[in-house]
Image (cartoon, rainbow, N blue to C red; front, side, top):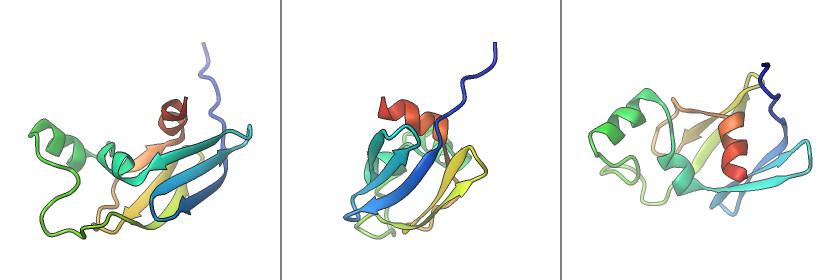
Length: 102
């Protein structure tokens, strides 16, 4: 059976430096808190930190307030975020973001 196509985002904004807000093509609006989003990064480095029970956020030597420096669509399947803690290797798939949104 073919995979169900993922609804594409039509707008991605940062709300009050507290949340990433995605408006999807079907008019659903999803809000993702920055700390929860940062902690859910699935890159190899963050997955390894989780396996070692090491914190992903906050960590020593990083800014006290979490923020996004930049975000961009990656192909038609994900969003790449550059965090102010210098982390930028994780790609959040549109499918997983939409699933989190319910």
